[in-house]
Length: 477
Image (cartoon, rainbow, N blue to C red; front, side, top):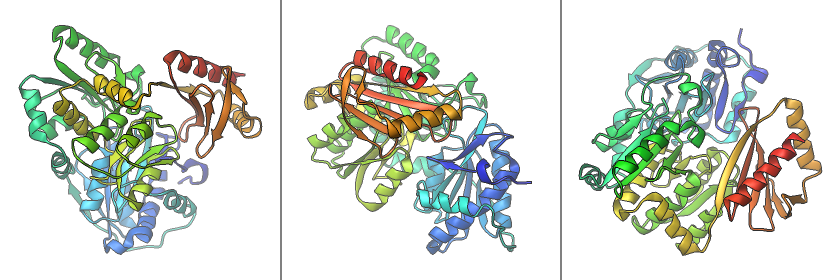
């Protein structure tokens, strides 16, 4: 029998659970038609009765998608079911292009291979707001009325998605840079849904690794973090030794291709904390675009400084791209980005899209003929702001430990961290302590895993490591 209650809870971006435990055929068959019903209640003015159903490359994801599609049609809705895996943003785009009620995507994004999940996308082409997922949770215990069964049709999401992305950049310039040998492009698909995507969009071959389907993700997780990228680092450093002086870039995509990181020509990891300022500069200067910059609370302090260079306003949100998507629906946004690699654009749907970000990164390199790290250093010089950043994901021993730490933050927050006085604390999402030495430490509990996330930005990496060491000691105390 389906088990609702604690087994189906939506986090920062969807519902996720261990396959065979929380994430089962029964639970998915329970929640999928209710999600379709809430999408209809929320976006029914589209006049549509169709829901997009898509999936990534996780264990049995296509089978779970078929189960979800069947359950949705039994609730009276028509389903447009993907013929193949694809990036989550491709399904968000399909929801908008097909005038659908929304999309249900079977994915667990960056989580380890034992997880699967469900992301719910709205008719507008982005993550639904929190009130929509709350409505889904509230209806889990209510039976759905019997309906005339809907129909299932199939589609391939890649063609329209690739065409849409090609139109947003100077593809000819990027292709020429690659084919003339001026730029070598590497990509790590992390065994996920981006596999083959960048070469398909560009129309020229690139060197892609981890393209095969591996539901165990090589024993790690499909998350664009340095600890999972040793193969890409080795490949790019080897290339750098054999092609000294030539431009090169590595692009990294998470499991469902909505998050990105990069590696520069010397083999150094570049998170979205580095990429977002570069992209703001490129879009404002080379493309002449304008609009608000939306950042999450964990975003780098360089972001507002680069925005100020171009008289762009900045809006700050809690962590979770759905908050950025909400803002993108309210006002003209140039770029909305989060520390974990999700970046979206006002020129596109209100959704993070790693392949579009990759194209803008390639366009920035092709236009400037400059390595990414050099572009970043130029921005630091322009803004007179230099910083280092790191993040630690700290597993917690138990939920009791989590409760104790949370109570301590709420009732006895620290007044001093790593020998520096706390100047203020922002608590719109987690606890962000700004310190007297122009650094900040953010402490936040994961919404999907028993993990404490520790974020720090400081003038030097030595200060970052000292502050994070303090935070780890505090958490273990």
